[in-house]
Each structure stands twice: as structure tokens, then as C-alpha cells.
Amino acid sequence: MANPNHLELLKQGVEAWNLWRQLHHEIRPNLAGANLRGWSLAHINLSGVYLHEANLSEADLRESLFIEADCGGANFHRARLNSANFQKANLRAAILSDTDLRNALLANADVSDADLRGTILAGANLEQAIFCGAVFKDAILNDVDLSKAHLQGAHLLNAYFCSRPFEDLR
Image (cartoon, rainbow, N blue to C red):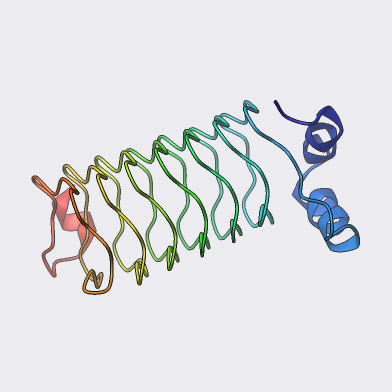
């Protein structure tokens, strides 16, 4: 359950939240289970935040930081996550369907058993990411290097790996 004080700070806006994070970097905020559906949070620093099973569907999280965040079971359905940084984040069993993850950094992230159906991952950095059991049905993976990613048991049915711009595929 989310810490009510942390949720109140977040309601003050991205600028106030990021300033608080700078001043209190030793605190690991708890937003577990929070309903942030549709919130405009572009450029927010959620690094190290506990977001387990939070609802971030349809949220604007462009260019946000999720470094080492715990997003296990979180719902990001239709969220805007382009250029977000999920380095070393836990995204196990997260719902990332129909999300925009263009140019996102998922290096060393654990995305096992996640739902990535219809997700745009064009240009994303997936180096050393763990996608065991993840579902990529209808995902757009052009201009990505999966050679160092862990894909054991991943479902890549109808995933697109072509070199055409992804706009041509929609």
C-alpha cells in the first residue's frame, strides 16, 4: 500500500517531487498499488521507487527515470514511456501492452513474464534485459539488438523486426 505522504508529495507535481527526491535521496518512496492512471508525469524521477502493482495506465511518463525501481506487477497499459530509463528495474509480470517504449533504456531490467503485446520498442536498448516468458505478440521491435537479451520462453508471435519506420506498420 502506498505511503500517503509520498502520494501527497506526488500530487504537488513533477517539479516539487523531483526537488524532494534530490533533497531526500536516502528515502525509498513507496507508491505500491497507487492509482496514477492518466497522470501527466513526464520527466519524473521514480528511481528506486516501490511501484509494485501500481496503476500507471495511460500515464505520460516520457523521459522519466525508473532506475532500480520495483515495478513488479505494475500496469503501464497504453502509457507513454518513450525515452524512459528502466535500467536495472524490476518489471516482472508488468502490463506494458500497447505502450510506447521507443528509445527506452531497459538494460539489465527484469521484464520476465511481462505483457508487451502491441508495444513499440523501436530503438530501445535491451542489453542484458531478461524477458523470460514475456509476451511480445504484435510488438514492434525494429532497430533493437536482442543478441544480449535473455529470451528463454518468450513469445514472439507476430512481433515485427523489420527496418521500416514503425509508423509504416500501424
